[in-house]
Amino acid sequence: MRDFASCLSQSGVQVAHSSSPGGQNMVQCTYLARLRGKSCSVTVTWSKMTMGQALSIAVDDSSNRCLCKTEIKPWLFSKRKGSKAMEVDGGALDIVWDLSSAKFAAGPEPVEGFYVALVCDLEAVLVLGDMPKEGDHRVSSDVSASSAVMIARKEHIYGKKVYSAKARFLDIGQLHHITIECDTSGLKDPSLEIRIGKKRVMQLKRLAWKFRGNQTVYVDGLPVEVLWDVHEWLFGSSSGCAVFLFQSGQSMEKLLLRSCSQNEKELQAHRFGFTLILHAWKIE
Image (tube, rainbow, N blue to C red; front, top):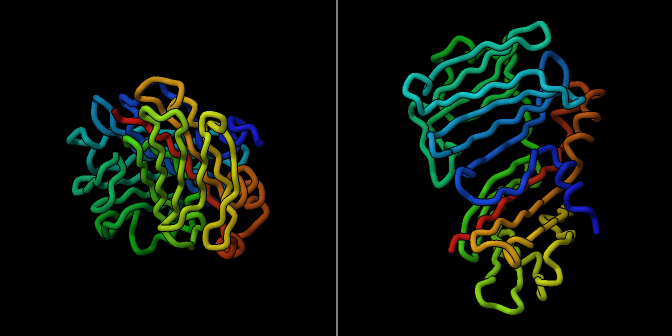
């Protein structure tokens, strides 16, 4: 069995167990992008805490060196729409956002009515959202389109025995519904079931003996490695957190190193894998 901690560290998204679900409503997405002709990763974190909601953005180069990092608290009235200029390797990186009409579902990540853009030398490093960009000269029609690809996502999900999420395991692939079901209340021999769409891809019995492990499943013919750690569900507190990792294709480090020697056309033609990390909190 692969070491769970090492697999998490290779995913490109920081992962840490938390002692309680309070203040942990967070979604973090990592994108493989281009900045001034070089490969980089952009990590966008949407979070909701007791003091309100926040957006943080970090840009790292291919050797994981932090190029810049900033935090925006858009739910302060004056920050729902704005911009910020940052110095990156001798150039200016503009971060532009409009969250004044953002709409949300259950989590801290907006689902519509917003945009966030990173622009450098009239090149769009990353553009998120569905709002028209004509209102800002830094995100005009003259800006070349972004070729950024989401390669990792981490989020916190909540439930009593059923936990749900969505993911694309290939950047051009279908959006899949993931359902994790595990009833641990009062059962001597709980089981774990994972469905992707309507298909059951994994079922574990005697979970007390298999609370950590990994297994390869197939989604649309694509191998996806699933790792799980449900120790806290079985042996921890009543509001324990389990961790699940779904990984297709190469890790982010391999993608960054490979992309260093590729030009833009080659990058657009390449199909990237994806890593999804779920912190599943039990609600009593």
